[in-house]
Image 1 (cartoon, helix red, strand yellow):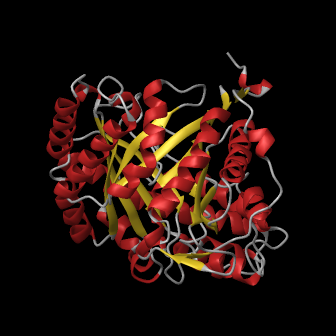
Image 2 (cartoon, rainbow, N blue to C red; image 1 turned 90 degrees about the vertical axis):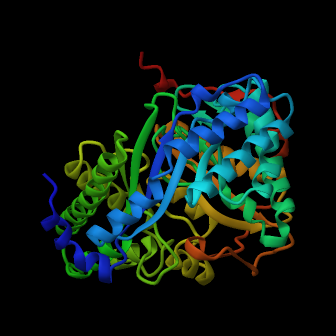
Image 3 (cartoon, one colour; image 1 turned 30 degrees about the vertical axis):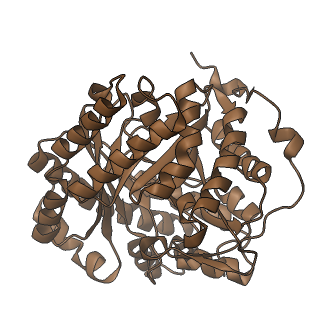
Length: 454
């Protein structure tokens, strides 16, 4: 049983080490909203979301106050909109009306973000899928809280290179349309391989079709807690190091489990999963890169970084699964650049490059995340970077993702400012050699041989 004594034990973590529940995310199925009439579809979506989530924010605030646990965000994920809007939408602009409806519903119930403006196209695109993808730049420009994702690959199906190439163009268009805000629209869009159905973290959250009508998923985060614990075993051997990380992850996950169970009970919505992800913030002491330095690296990106990150990620997962039977989502260590002051410092010191980040994604929880690149980076280059990361996920049977921000009008040496949890990011250089002939080929990269396990 989880009790208040366990929460009290973590009080120092909360007060001094930046432990928080990063998000309570309510997943809502919109399958019952489907209509061939666009106006009726939008009305159904608005009514469904506002009815299901009317008490979400209030409940989160009550739990936070009662237990003294910071709950940073309350969010909603919905069924991928390409599936919901297929019958009613005849052009990309029709999908944009749904994005506006999602934004209005999210605003009215008071949540921070809403995810699920998404398409699942790992093997091919329907007409609705392609229209939604083409609508993403306008949708993200005209809304504040809507987040979008596209799953373009999987271990079972390979990589849909037609979608990857199209997305390169859409990212550049999004960057241009939001150029007056440092191309912030790109911050709300992520491309996946092997996307999970139950991820509570944005921008990649959507409510998978295998999920129940409603679900409560919680994302908990504590890089500062792990770093502080490691300070106590600074000169210890690897076994002691691993045990310390594992025990700390166990305690952090128990906090998430408590919040998830309480929210589930009070909202009368089934509990889904706890996602234990070491998701950093720009706050000093809340950095995954600082953990790597505590393990023994001068900067993130130094030789040994990938090995240290692999160890950290594995021990976090081991501690998490001992604490809860329902650990899911992404769970592990995130390595976004703009949201992690230690990562920013490493980039500015010249220790961390895009290529080294790509190597690190082979062993972490997500991929190339919140990385600002020059605004004149070509669409085919963006597509090539995406394809590389999707290949890592496909071959290694893991989730990988890409969130690139080609900052319009910015060059290497400049920086972009997003504020809040999203921080700021230095513009990172990109390999200038062309991959145009490769990404312009039609079709898909087939699944690897080890995908055939039936």
